[in-house]
Image (cartoon, chains in turn orange, green):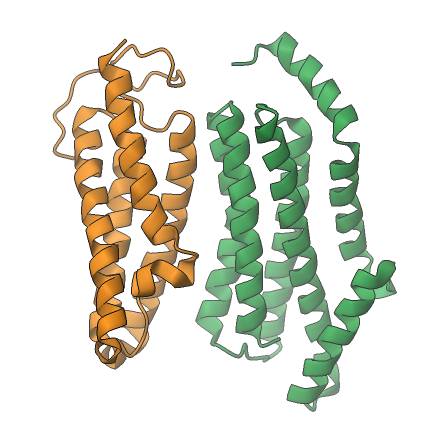
Amino acid sequence: MTATQDGPQTQGTPGESPKPARTRLIGGPGMLLVWFYGVMVVGAVSRSVYQIATDFDRAPLAYTLSAIAGVVYGFITYSLVRGGEGARRAALVCCAAELAGVLIVGTWTMVEPSAFPDSTVWSDYGMGYVFIPVLLPLTALYWLRRSRTAAVTP
Amino acid sequence: MTDSRGHSVDTLRTCDDTADGRCGLGCCGVRAGASRGAARGPAVADATSGAAAPGAATAGGGGRNKVAFMLDALTLATGVAALLLAAWCGWAAYRDQPTKDWHFIGMAVVSVLALVQLVVGIVQLARGEKPEQGTAIFVAYLLGAFACVPAAGFMSLAERTRWGSVTVAAGGVVLAVLEVRLYDIWGG
C-alpha cells in the first residue's frame, strides 16, 4: 500500500526479538487477531455480495454498510499480515474508523430501526456476531499501540 | 521456539497427557462414521428423535427423512468434534504449548467430517432438496465450514507458540457456530 517502508522481508521471529527490518504485526496474539479479522472479512464480504446481488432494493443502506465493513476488514487484515510501520499506522486508523463505524451504526440501528429493514454486520453493535465487531477493533487498537512500544524500546 | 529435540519430547508427553481429549475426538469420528448403525449412547439417540421429527413434519417424501437425518447427524457430529478440538487446543494454549502432531490429526478428523458434510450436502442439492434459506447460502456455509479448520491449522503452523493453539481453538469455535447456522439454513 502507501507504506514506502524500509526493510526487505519480514523476519520470521516472534515478538520478543525486535530487529526492526519491518515491524512484525502477526507474532503471538497478532495471529489470533488476523484469524478473527479473516473470518470477519469472509463473513462480511460474502454476506454483502450475496445480499447486494440478490435483493439490493430491500435494504440498500444496510447492505452497503455491510460491504464497507467488509472492505475495511479486508484492508486491516492485509495491513496486519504485511507488517511495517506504515501498515501499522494505516491499520490503526482503520481500526479507529471501524470502531467508530460499529458505534455509529450500532446506535443508529437502535435509534431508528426503520432505516434498516435488514440487519448489517454492525447492527446492534454486532450482536449477530457475538459482539466480535465491537471487541475486535478494541483489541486491535491495543495490540497495534503495544507493538509500536515494543518496536521502539529494544 | 521448539527445537526438534524439545518438540519430540513434548509430543510424547502430550500423547500421554491428552489421552482423554484425543479419545474423545477419535470416538466422535468413529461414531459419525458408524452413525447409520446407531452406534452408541444417548447422544445419537437424541439426534435420531430430534432429526426425525422435523423431517416428518416438513416433507411427505419417504427419502427425505433418512437423508435429512444423515445431514443433521453430520452437522451435530462436526459441531461436537469442533468444540472438542477447541477445548483440546485451548488446553494446549493454557499449558503454553504450540500445536503438536496429535492436534493436527485432530484437525484432520474434523476437516474430514466437514468434507463429508460438504459432499453429502451437495448430493442433497443434486437430488433436488431445497435448503430452507436458499441454496447459495447453504453452499457458502458448507464451503466456509470446510475451509475453517484447515485455515486455522496453517496459521498455527506459522505461529509456533501458544497463540497458534489459541487460533486453532478459535477456529473450532467458529466452526461450531457455522454448524449451528447450517442447521438453521437447512431447516432443522
